Image 1 (cartoon, helix red, strand yellow):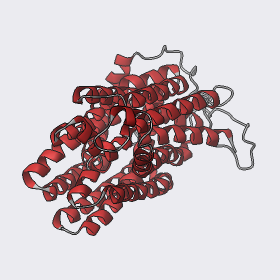
Image 2 (cartoon, helix red, strand yellow):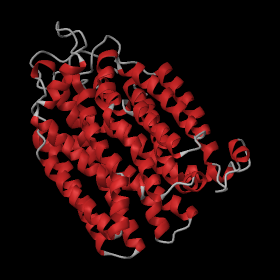
Image 3 (cartoon, helix red, strand yellow):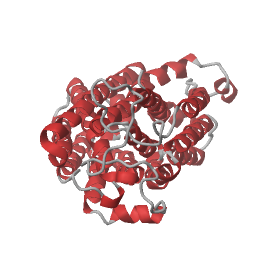
Length: 445
């Protein structure tokens, strides 16, 4: 296997485990609520608070990866979020649950910005969409299988370890699941540190390799090439500070559309990994069926992620960077809005589940274009650029469960999906305004 492919595979495995740790709480939320005596609002707030710190630490940790390299940042992040995941199995109060969820957000915040920088260092420009989709697919696969795997473990571990000691009234060993996931995550952190390197041998980023060339024939892009990617020593200017990187981003109008896109679509998408089990419970679906239906919906997203990488690379070749990145995003967000509209007008459970699956597919089909946009315009600030979008996006995700559960209580699930449709329409507009032909800073590309 070519080395750059192997790097992508290891990074995808790290993303897979991150999403297992992140999503598992949604299927365990009801047993946790029963054992800790939480209200519906407290449960929703605990689900959403993770995204607050996850959002706020995107740029700081992404900037650390830009400056010190993604390998060390990701290795430390994986180990840290694994420890926090294990600690989730030890909580006894609502306050403690909120605290560990906040810490999980901090420790996972740098994962995708650092991974985006790693992909840029190892991928040819025309491979960025596919490589990015492969890493993001790892996360989606982890999220898709987390409900089924978690539900099976929660029942299978009954009578072992923390469950028998705590005497959980729910009859579900959610504590043991978190401890087990945390321990396995430490293994993933070690694997990442051992096998991943920040850049190809020679300290340069790959240019397009001529047909028939050997994998080790790496060389820098020649001067004047339209899509130059420098080695870390190409500029004599000292590395930018965090404040300078942030200044480059916040003064760029396109970055606000980039952030607006992710804020709006995450308000709606976060429903799938936070409140979907609650929606299915209200529809009369049993726990065993809930975890399978949630897994099925999220697997549809995995299919979209696989296709999306090829779509964004093809569209860039056909339409250029301006429309090749923006059109796939705008079209997919419009399709998501349509699916939410259908659900808000229908009372049939299977119509809703099918529409949610299509929504997940379309959402993830557009995600590789989002990553590739940040890589196209970010230059040396890829981690900070993607971190900016992820920050605003996860502020939307943090708002999502708290907002949507209150809308549901006041007006019903139909109003929830109508609101989600409106947010996707706004996301489509923001996506259409993105221009990947204009770098954040021409001197840094």
